[in-house]
Image (tube, rainbow, N blue to C red; front, side, top):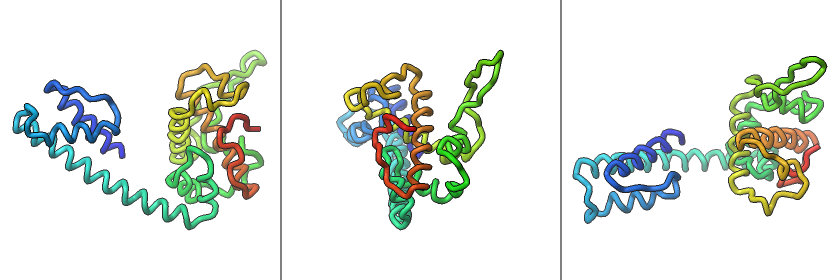
Length: 212
C-alpha cells in the first residue's frame, strides 16, 4: 500500500511539473488517469508514456491489495474473535487478524491497561521530586498491532466530527496534536479490545467517549 501511495505521489509530482495540479489523495487518481489518457491534452509523448507506466504500476498494486483484502476478510470471518473485534470502529480485518495471530492470551493481563502497556501504548512514567511526568511513548510491545491501532485511531479521527463527540467526554476536551490524540484513542481501543475478548462481548461503546 505504501508503494502504491508513492507511485500516486510520483504521478502527481510529474503532472505538477508540467502545469497540471491535483490535490493530495487517492480520490483524485481517476481525474489524473482521465487527463493522462486524454490525447487532446498537451503532454509530451515521453511524459505521457512515463505517466502511463506509473498508472500501470498503480493498477497492479491495487489488484494485489484487493486480493489480499479479500483473503483477510475471509480469514476474519472464520474466527468469532476476529468478527467480534470488527464491531469496533477503526478495527478492520487486518487489525482483527493481527490481534488473533500475534496477540497473547488476554487472560495473561489483569486489566486492559496492562494490555495497552504490552502494546507500548502507555507512555513511560518518570518521577521527579515526588511528581510523576509522562515521557515519550515506549517502544515495547507488539509493534504491528500497535501501529495498526494507531492507524485505525487516525482513521476514526478523520471522520469523527465534533457533532458526534459526546459533550464532556475526554475526546471533546482534547486540545493536543492530532497524533497524540490518536495514540490516546488507540490506548482506549486496546483497553476495549481486552474487555471485549475477556468478557466475550461485542463493542458496546462505538464512540469510545468514556472508557473505564
